[in-house]
Image 1 (cartoon, rainbow, N blue to C red):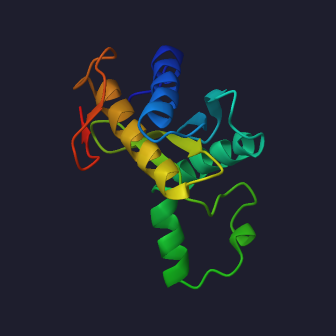
Image 2: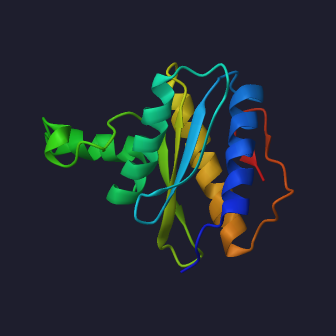
Image 3: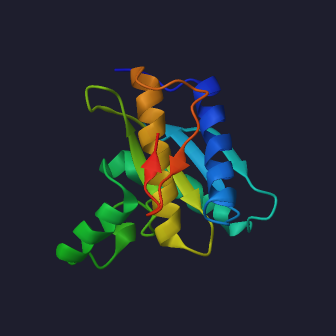
Length: 158
């Protein structure tokens, strides 16, 4: 199992902020946590609302604790008729925008949370993209200096 180091996490956070701003026109907060859900790195765009701080951290924590994106967790809760999210843990988020980060063997090594306070679906897209890039960097299939580009349909081209 690989671990997330501060250099890679810091780069990923900055890249996520740039992607949110340039591609999605969003001011966001981005949080990255380790495999236990403890915060490794965080940054907030100066235009992002204060409420995005806690939300981004909770989304990253949720992705790690439940082993799936927050969007997938929400769908599972709906199928299982989970009426009270707080029953599980008060730190879990029921808002899309969190994604687990996996090593090359598929083990969860961390989570990333993105919060804009405007578009949860775009938050999830940014988190998924960032988690994929971070997983690729950790597993050695991508270098830090590679920039993500988008095709005409908005799909990431790494």
